Amino acid sequence: MTAPTGATDTETTTTETKPGDGGTESARVFSQDELNSILAKHKRDIEGKFQGFDQLKDKAAKFDALEESSKTEVQKATEVAAQYKAQLEEAQASMARQEMVALRNRIAHAKGLDPKLCERVRGETEEEITADVEDLLTLQVSKPKTYNGGLRSGAMPIDAATAKERAAAALRNARER
Figure 1 (cartoon, rainbow, N blue to C red):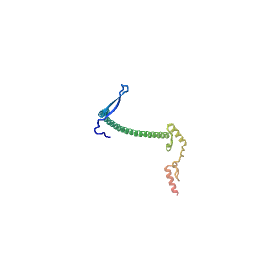
Figure 2 (tube, helix red, strand yellow):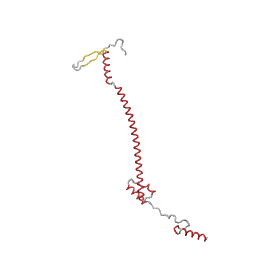
Figure 3 (cartoon, rainbow, N blue to C red):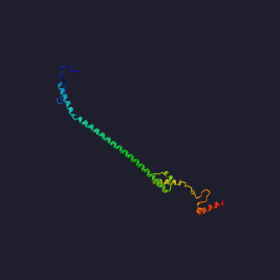
Figure 4 (tube, rainbow, N blue to C red):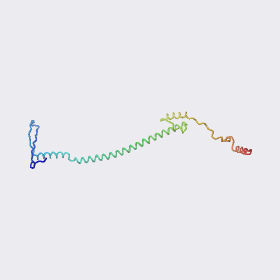
């Protein structure tokens, strides 16, 4: 909607109520120029309140970017710390297992358990390990003692004669044949 030419000076009527006059209304008529100046003044007042807001907005954006970059550094450091913590826990668990195996082997050796049975030893405390080793010892079947080569097929015991006696016996046997 466009205004007709030459009608720039329209009048607007507003009703104002003054607090002290007992509620009576007085009508005041504003011209378009007065209304425009009032609106312009009101706009300047509002813009004055937010003067420098763009600078603050830029500073807030820079602060947010800085905070985000520092958060990234903190997150990186947190991830690295978590990795090292996991490695430490794994190393400690491995060391505890190795110490337990060494304790089991030491107790089994001290009690005289066959080394082949050491990996069957169970228990978490020294008392439990000792009890398990003793149980295994009661179940361990002792090997029958074998004669360690004193006899050879068709020969006499080695301990029965000395080397000279054996040589003399071999010569006798050779003559007789």
